[in-house]
Image (cartoon, rainbow, N blue to C red; front, side, top):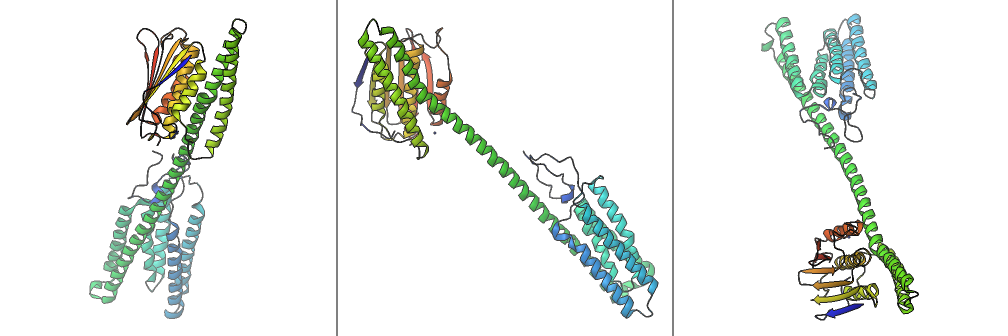
Amino acid sequence: MSHTTTRSAVPGTGAAARPGAAPRPDAGPETQPETGPEGAPSPVRRAPVVPASARWVGVVLYTAVLLGGLYYGLLVERPVAAGRLAGFTAAMAALFALEALQHRRRSRPAHRPPAREAAGLLLARLPLFVAAVWLEGSGVARALYVLIPFTAYFAFGPAVALALAGGCTALLLTGYTLTVPGWYAEAEYVSDLVMFVLGLAMAVSMAAMAAGEQRGRARLEESHRRLSAYAARVAELSTAAERNRLAREIHDSLGHHLTAVAIQLEKAAAFSDRDPPVAARALADARWSADRALQEVRRSVRALGEDGTPPFSLPEALADLVRHAGGRDEPRIDLDIGGQGADGYGPAALTALYRAAQEGLTNACRHAAATRISVSLDLGPSAARLVIGDDGRGPGGAAAPGEGFGLRAMRERVGLLGGTVTVAARPGGGTVLTVTVPRAAGA
């Protein structure tokens, strides 16, 4: 039997869910380990990487020096020193060959550490630079020395590049001192020295800019990789959250109604011979529960294409739920609704309260073997409070199922709205379920 008491007028309709470290700013790109798809260092080490914007510098400088040396040797110098010119051309050809070799190796795994390979290429170029400068008579070949700190910057960093630039300057000063007495009084030699130092400074500056561009691109790629990983993780978590939400909906809607059908069919079978009217009433309630299950499925399908849960009247829904759950026989269910109405409570909050009432009544009727159940709903100005008490076995009873999926789903649903769920033993026997949801939740 169900009994409803309303303390105050309730409106009939209310509003019814470290991946990878960044490159060090003081190191060239070639000193950083390559990263795999998950940010882990790759086991394959590659040759030193010169930024694409700086790879043309060596070829352009070699071409300019070669053309300048040939022009001076063929058209200016008299007589033409064929042997020196041939040696100069051979030295420049060897430099072009080394540049081509390095270009081919950039995309291949390196068997030696990158720094050792860079040092080997630098040592291979140095005697060719010296030979080209000695064989070329105009002095334009001295520009080749600027490539020493330039290429070293990417392999060893700015400190080594600056040290090598200072070494090149010292080498030129030593040469002037040994070969040209009083050179510092000659404007031509002083001008060459100043231009040489400026060239070295420009080379180091260009290398720093190119390395900074490379580091910026590497950081951008790393940020993109992390963002892609985070997006995939968010999608995975969103899918898991949606699965949990659908599981709650199936349990709270279909699960409740199918349980009610099973209870009513058991009652009909038990009273079919002793009290046919009671059995007929149980069958009618079972049909009603089956119809409500079908309505819940249709409502859920419609909600998937809409923004949230459609509005519904919580007091009317609870009265309908209590009426068909209790029937005319045990358990007796008393419903008490009070407060200021459902205005200000969103559909998610009202749905959470209704699902909690479904779960509480199902547990009391099916598992606790209660004969008396009280349902109290207070829609207060700041929070709604639902209390379901029964005189059954209690939370510690032998037949009690414990905190199963239904109660966990209830806690999760209410917790997402900032509410609380408590289950306690009732004095004198039984269980008290209390659900509190803030007014602004789900609005």
